[in-house]
Image (cartoon, rainbow, N blue to C red; front, side, top):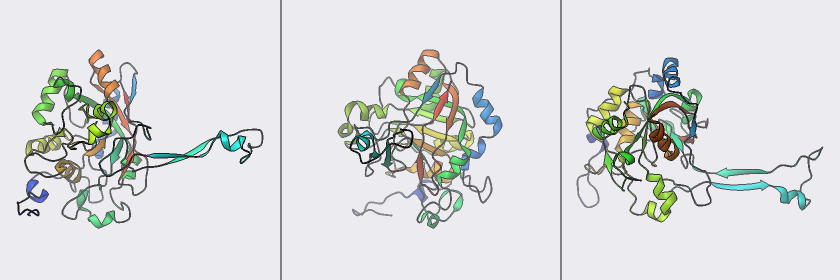
Length: 323
């Protein structure tokens, strides 16, 4: 494959040739991928890491007056009031019998325009989504591998936070800064924690601090997010570890463009499309990370339930961590 300049481009078929897949592992009708690993025993394993009862929520604000961090080309949520106190004082509305009044509103938003889970059918290549379903099943809505399949089960189990920004002595990683398996394991060792099979892996890069502290212009300038970068070793590590979900404080969970191949978002293909790893993005880890430093506990019960949007390519979520 060549681009308009005649330069040969690497394709996902070429890049991922020989990489592992979980298609058929849980049957031909499977639509939840690595969520199958989270058995009742795995939920109880997560519960064992509840020690103090401290609760943290990981969702970012939706419809923030200062703007919402979203993938370029998407827009943040818009919230509109349909009625409020002014409707009663103007006489346009009357109180309910007995005197009750109420306000009402609604939002318009991209389903992936906030803290959210991707549906397993969200991205694909080669005309097939996760588990080999035809990409035509996405037409007009996700007939297969929609986000409601994840919402029906919920994602509950052991979670572990790896603070890559703090490990590298930074408030936030730089644009296009990458890390891989060795970096994850080195950071985990420095924190005194292990990344175990069937974990929900959370990685803090500090990247959202750029948006909230420096503003949208700085955030989107020459937009290339920091994050995990593709290597065969990384893909095999996720496969062998049987990682359930990957959650980060970036919009895409990986460096935007692979620095070696030039492929955009190859881990969406290698991990989500091929292995069925759940992707949750745009999460807020700042308070949780500070607490983990203070008490030395980097593991916890993780619980995430995306909205049950039928046929959705993704859905908002406000995950809960209990330590």
